[in-house]
Amino acid sequence: MSIVRRVLLSFSFLIASISYADVTNIYQTHCSGCHGKNLSGGSGSSLIDNEWKYGGRDEDIAQVIKYGAPDMGMPAWGKILTDEDVRSLVILIREETKAASLTQMQAELAPENGVIEASGHKYSLTTLAELNGVLWGMAFLPDGSILVTERSGSLWQISDKKKRKIIDVADVWQHGQGGLLDVYLHPDYLNNGWIYMSYSHSVEPKLFGRDKGITKIIRGKIRNGQWQDQQTIFELDDKFHTSAGVHFGSRLAIIDGYLFFSIGDRGDMALAQQLDKPNGKIFRVHDDGRVPKDNPFVDQKGALPEIWSYGHRNPQGMTVARDGKTLWITEHGPRGGDEINIVEKGKNYGWPVVTHGMNYNGTPMTAHTSKPGMVDPLHYWVPSIAVSDIDFYSGEAFPLWKNRLLVSGMASEELHLLDVKGNSIEEDRIILKNRGRIRDVAVGPKGVIYLLLNNRGSKTGKLVTMNPVK
Image 1 (cartoon, rainbow, N blue to C red):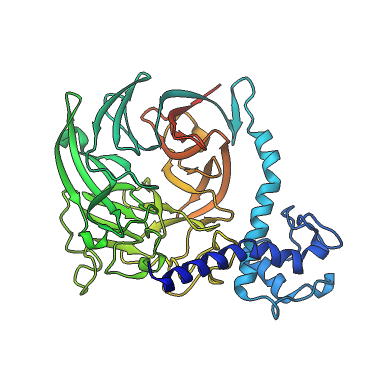
Image 2: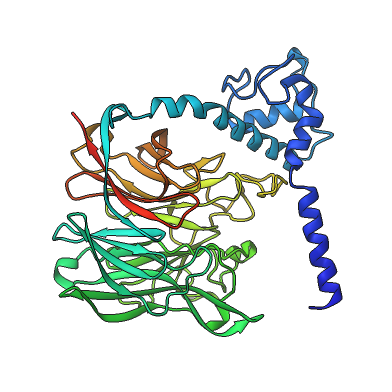
């Protein structure tokens, strides 16, 4: 490594360490004198009780910070703070408000004699299987058994609390967040037997002495407990492979014979806006891997023809709506700004030009949460819940939850229940808390809810069911 490069890297690390608590410093310098050191109030009102005199939307709070509230004696900060600073303060307020509410939330969702009550229903949790690895995706087979992927590369079949390994996928690149990821049954599985899997795949040559790779899609069949007839559905040229260990995306869905899948920005956020790069995109191919002639960029010079939409950060949730036509996704924001989106042909979803989040070190990313020509999210979370997979509830076991959207959260260790009206989100409730990082959620054939939980701080996971209690 050259001396110049070492100096630049050292300088960048120094800047990152200096600015780590930037938004906290801004608050303590300009706001704590009135609103208290912990945002709980002083001569000014509390900022964490969710009571707002001038409106509780993000934009309402930002307006008051910028222009003040003269009738309440609050000065305007717009000439001192940048729009990015103001946006960071809004995120900080949301984070601290959530933290202040956790004690009450945990008490409300605490089990009593093994029974949890939430949003009109009572339920208990049952563990079906435990594995010594990070669990990622699941799919239900017609015989009642469940396929589960383990990030290290193993596909498991679980039935009656017994587990059997189907295959160790040979070319899985387990690196950082990568490995064997999603598994998905073809909607016509009973006739064709196809099972799809996504995973991070590595090839030579190495980059700076390290392996490099990106998401790959395969399909195959299970006969007599053996994985057979494997086919490659999607694989990118080596030039797109990178040594980064983050943001592989990799959720799968099929609509009308078309396979949709996600690839995250791979930690290089600017590439999400470039159509000649796979980073930060939703892709659409025929279920056998062929490129559809009506894809939006198929005739655009230099663009990857498989791209369906772009401007995504790291979509790790994907499901098909009740109409069988509409594709819903979730994607991770940075610090704040997790999103739910409906994916439409050729649309730009904004990352990193617009976001409701900020940098992990507390520094502003952008003041823009919306721009013309970019799709606004249907719903977003500040603070982030580390949103993962989703599924619409369609069973009879929990009738009050029917047609609502189940959303899994990893860092928050939460399961959310969202009330969906058309293409809008009316209400967001938490129905499970602090049972582990929820990577996947799916509604089983009998309406029971299945969860893949990974234990914080250890590489172990389990398959759990939520069972109704009368």
